[in-house]
Amino acid sequence: MNFQRPESLKDSCNHYCPGCGHGIIHRIMAESIDELNIREKVIAIAPVGCAVFGYFYWNFDTAEAAHGRPPAVATGIKRVMPDRVVITYQGDGDLAAIGGNEILHAANRGENITVFFVNNACYGMTGGQMAPTTLLNQITTTTPKGRTLEDGWPVKICELLSPLEGTCYAERVTIHTPKNILKTKKAVKKALENQLKKKGFSIVEILSMCPTGWKVPAEESIDLIEKKMTEYFPPGVYKDV
Amino acid sequence: MKKLWKGNLALVEGAIAGGLDAYFGYPITPQNEVTEYMSLRMREEGRIFLQAESELAAINMVFGAALTGKKTMTSSSSPGISLMQEGISYMAGCELPAVIVNVQRGGPGLGNISGAQGDYNQTVKGGGHGDYRLITYTPATVQELYEMTRDAFDITLKHRIPVIILTDGVLGQMMEPAEIPETPEATGETNPDLGWNLTGCRNRNPRFIRSLIMNEGGLEEHNYHLWNKYEKLKNSAQWEETDTEDAELIMIAYGTSARIVRDVHQKAREQGLKTGCFRLKTAWPFPSKRLMELSNKAKFLVVEMSMGQMIDDVRLACESKTAVEFYGRPAGGLPEVSRIEEKAREMIG
Image (cartoon, rainbow over all chains, first blue to last red; front, side, top):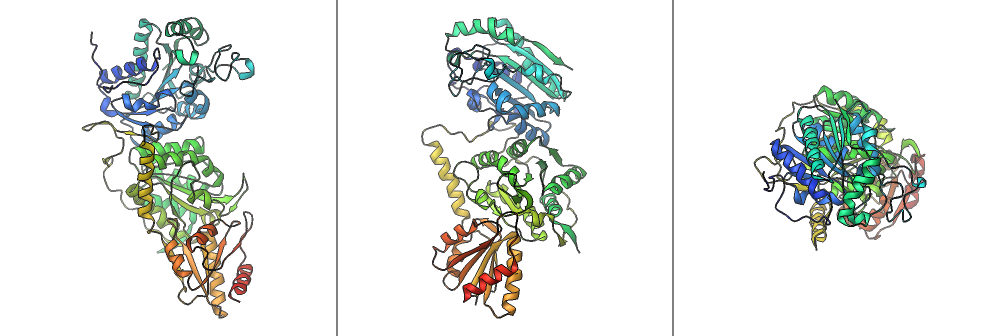
């Protein structure tokens, strides 16, 4: 067992709230990059959202994109540097709301990039507003009485992107238990390997906790993933070509 | 040897001669020939062409390619350029080099597809949010469309300030003789390390490029840094003067309006009127100093294909020390030679 800091993570304190899932996901991503020995080839895109400061924690080249635009920015990089490993790390507001068009078309073109999509069912950075993935009846600062159908249905991204010809791999995972963390690591690594094999567009949707945004204690946020999120967003492999 | 070239095609050849690595664009009239001809020429040259799903995506693909230090560009027309303003502001904040061509059409809104000059303020006064400037070239001939686009890539890489080629639908669609050499062989390294670009952190520490600066005083410092760069360029404006030495009235214009003004001037001189022409080749930096000098001996008539945007900069430049008057027509009309002539005669008195 190796409990050292992966080389792909900087020696820094992060700004995430207690109980947040980003730290776990950063570590999974960093371990996978180390194991594939691709750190020096990675160019990552940090989103607008809680992970915007990714570049303070990730020990590889990183740029910040405008809200929702990481798939377009990644396309620009990948097209001019096809032998680099291009990663976008996006939240649900970034990817599924404002960036809906960019993700759809990057997937449809089969852009040979890897997308890590962190779905925590709210806008964390701005204080816990409704996201496109907010569950029905879920209370947020813009659905104070719970999300209703007046606000629309929560968006299922893996289900939406997997029928596209250009998508080679779409899997939904969670990080609320150690067993699922290991499963997530497998998916993250596979999504990176796909890019190395030039297989096309890969996305891993990661259900993650946001106790601050959900206004619940950290332990309860883990239960909510198990009981509520996985019910509406079933984990599993949606596409693997 | 000179050949007949369409403006929109000439600028594509200029970009290719300037070493363009990657073009991203989205169709819009009256610049479609740019995207269409790019799709043919770039792939012929073994370079990157990609039709984006929107102008938002196009400018962000440009942002991505620019992060790596490659020569990259997009082109559009007024409504599409409005959509790109977010990306342009981010590029200005991140100090990314790129070339953006605006083949202006009429606005506001969808307006129509005829040439216009209604985007001057948007281009030189920001357009997107925040305090920033864009190096702005204003070609007036098909030859200049070729040359300015060709040279824009080295300029943007040198200063790390995005460059806009501000032209219009008249010039983009027009054909006239131009000298356009065969494409030279591409030279230079494929992935040079420019000291700032993202290419993967092999043999160096990781880099990051961002425009979000949250640390105490950091953003202010960054803005001062940008502003110092802009200040240094202030005196590198480019322009062309005709018969200004003895002129009593100098007509100031850029792009298509400058061509109309040139005709007015020739006729006026034949009739013994002491007119002169001042044509902007860059709208930012603006030739303020020279206009101040000229304002000591001549009146100014500003001609634009708008209701008057550049005129504000002219007035500021000369601190209204001389009479500064305006003739223009808004989008949908073209300035008339006879009306400008009338106005000039009236001003000379």
